[in-house]
Image 1: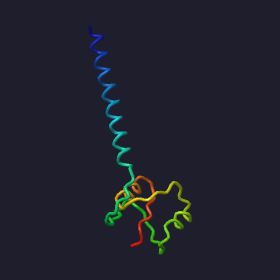
Image 2: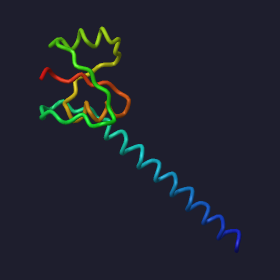
Image 3: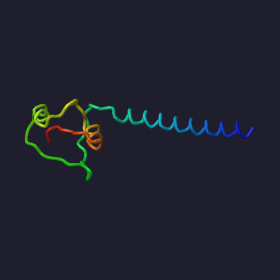
Image 4: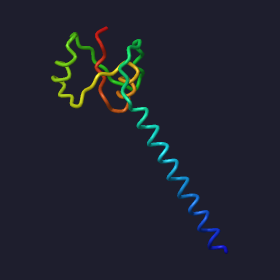
Length: 93
Protein backbone atom coordinates (compact mmCIF):
# COMPACT_ATOMS: atom_id res chain seq x y z
CA UNK A 1 0.00 0.00 0.00
CA UNK A 2 2.85 2.39 0.84
CA UNK A 3 4.52 1.55 -2.47
CA UNK A 4 1.40 2.50 -4.40
CA UNK A 5 1.24 5.78 -2.51
CA UNK A 6 4.90 6.59 -3.30
CA UNK A 7 4.43 5.63 -6.97
CA UNK A 8 1.39 7.91 -7.14
CA UNK A 9 3.33 10.83 -5.64
CA UNK A 10 6.26 10.29 -8.05
CA UNK A 11 3.87 10.07 -11.01
CA UNK A 12 2.19 13.31 -9.91
CA UNK A 13 5.55 15.09 -9.65
CA UNK A 14 6.70 13.83 -13.06
CA UNK A 15 3.40 14.88 -14.65
CA UNK A 16 3.60 18.33 -13.04
CA UNK A 17 7.13 18.89 -14.35
CA UNK A 18 6.15 17.69 -17.84
CA UNK A 19 3.09 19.96 -17.90
CA UNK A 20 5.04 23.01 -16.69
CA UNK A 21 7.75 22.52 -19.34
CA UNK A 22 5.12 22.05 -22.04
CA UNK A 23 3.40 25.31 -21.06
CA UNK A 24 6.77 27.11 -20.99
CA UNK A 25 7.55 25.92 -24.53
CA UNK A 26 4.11 27.01 -25.76
CA UNK A 27 4.61 30.44 -24.22
CA UNK A 28 8.06 30.82 -25.79
CA UNK A 29 6.84 29.80 -29.23
CA UNK A 30 3.97 32.31 -29.03
CA UNK A 31 6.23 35.13 -27.88
CA UNK A 32 8.69 34.54 -30.74
CA UNK A 33 6.06 35.26 -33.35
CA UNK A 34 7.26 38.15 -35.45
CA UNK A 35 4.69 40.91 -35.86
CA UNK A 36 4.77 43.25 -38.84
CA UNK A 37 1.84 45.58 -38.17
CA UNK A 38 2.81 49.25 -37.97
CA UNK A 39 3.59 50.59 -34.52
CA UNK A 40 5.43 53.52 -32.93
CA UNK A 41 9.18 53.55 -32.19
CA UNK A 42 10.11 52.38 -28.69
CA UNK A 43 13.16 52.98 -26.50
CA UNK A 44 16.20 50.74 -26.76
CA UNK A 45 16.81 50.20 -23.05
CA UNK A 46 20.15 49.71 -21.38
CA UNK A 47 20.82 46.01 -22.11
CA UNK A 48 21.21 46.50 -25.83
CA UNK A 49 23.97 47.71 -28.13
CA UNK A 50 23.10 49.89 -31.09
CA UNK A 51 24.83 51.67 -33.93
CA UNK A 52 23.52 54.42 -36.20
CA UNK A 53 23.98 54.04 -39.94
CA UNK A 54 22.91 56.76 -42.36
CA UNK A 55 21.04 54.76 -45.02
CA UNK A 56 17.54 53.90 -46.10
CA UNK A 57 18.58 50.59 -47.70
CA UNK A 58 18.01 47.98 -44.98
CA UNK A 59 18.59 45.03 -47.32
CA UNK A 60 22.06 46.28 -48.27
CA UNK A 61 22.91 46.90 -44.61
CA UNK A 62 21.82 43.36 -43.70
CA UNK A 63 24.00 42.02 -46.51
CA UNK A 64 27.02 44.04 -45.33
CA UNK A 65 26.51 42.75 -41.78
CA UNK A 66 26.17 39.20 -43.20
CA UNK A 67 22.82 38.64 -41.50
CA UNK A 68 20.98 35.43 -42.35
CA UNK A 69 17.31 34.47 -42.08
CA UNK A 70 16.14 38.07 -42.15
CA UNK A 71 12.46 38.94 -42.02
CA UNK A 72 10.39 42.08 -41.57
CA UNK A 73 9.37 43.06 -38.04
CA UNK A 74 7.71 45.97 -36.30
CA UNK A 75 9.33 47.85 -33.42
CA UNK A 76 7.83 45.69 -30.67
CA UNK A 77 8.82 42.34 -32.21
CA UNK A 78 12.17 43.64 -33.43
CA UNK A 79 13.22 44.93 -30.03
CA UNK A 80 11.95 41.80 -28.27
CA UNK A 81 14.02 39.58 -30.56
CA UNK A 82 17.04 41.87 -30.30
CA UNK A 83 17.01 41.29 -26.54
CA UNK A 84 17.03 37.53 -27.30
CA UNK A 85 20.37 37.78 -29.14
CA UNK A 86 18.90 38.88 -32.43
CA UNK A 87 19.49 41.91 -34.62
CA UNK A 88 16.86 44.53 -35.40
CA UNK A 89 17.39 47.01 -38.21
CA UNK A 90 14.93 49.77 -37.45
CA UNK A 91 13.10 51.75 -40.08
CA UNK A 92 14.73 55.03 -41.03
CA UNK A 93 13.98 57.66 -38.39
